[in-house]
Image 1 (cartoon, rainbow over the protein chains, first blue to last red):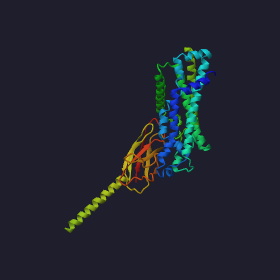
Image 2: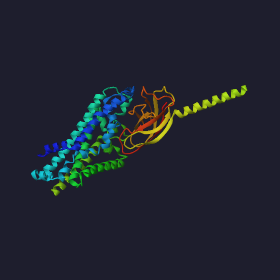
Image 3: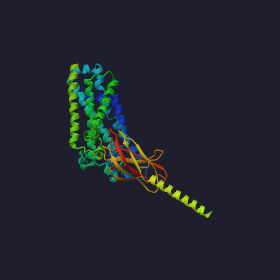
Image 4: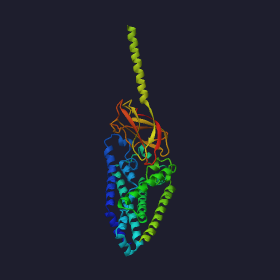
Length: 277
Length: 136
């Protein structure tokens, strides 16, 4: 992979990626700290609600301002994570130069791998930082009545991991979140090879708008089958509070379908890009 | 004259008693009905006057919850918007739950307390909810 190293450098030098990482790092660090600062003066707060790290991690990934920011921007992250590098190299002569040196296949596979690995690592690390800060802020082993609202229902996939250890379940959710955003980032990147975008702003806004519309439509279609709704599967509280049971097979099927769609887009993007070259 | 005096005192006492009883009845419980919004956020669903400042909790019964979740997040706030209880407490569908106020910020007698409800999960659809509650 002759371009892999330089593609990683280009991605992390991208202004969009830098801003996204800084904003997310701020959210991941200050969300638990702000919850601690706001609630500490209220006497009886921790005696009533509890102060267990697992409970607060689930709660904050359900109700706090940090979760609102994360869930609201969720479908923009995959677009920003591409750094628009594929798009920018396509509209300049850089792509033609690089392809002429080592071929379209090498160029394209490098871009797919770079976007997938970097996005996965970025979100895995950022969400892990949030867990670490939560662990530092909330560290009681006392389990109040409210604690049990955060524990997944027994038949859910999450409960199996909770039984191993609450931390194990937390990292399964971090993995699922990071994997989803990484898969969608690859999907968006391939569309830059398939569809011609007029300018940088359309390349940034149009795919994100499509993801929001698709997610909204899917949520409406799956209103009676919420266990297949990806926006719910990635929320830890859904395994505890949702009436429908999110089983392991539901998670595998949903992620499998997304992975197949992404794979088809990768092939389509490769063929379409080769034709243009 | 004495007879008139007795009658008016009796009338005043009766009126006072009826008034007290009706205030008590009004503040005892209130039914609520509404929709939890898409995504997440406060739904100020009911406002009731506080009756007994010594009680350290409010009581909520969720009698119906539309498709989605099996519980709601329930908390209370004052007219200025400050919370009287933690927004991290949940109440299950079909059950009655006592939720404690902050110990250092119990709402005073006569104060209006607003019940807030929220979805515990970030969803794309609204969820119907109904039940009853008392701020005590």
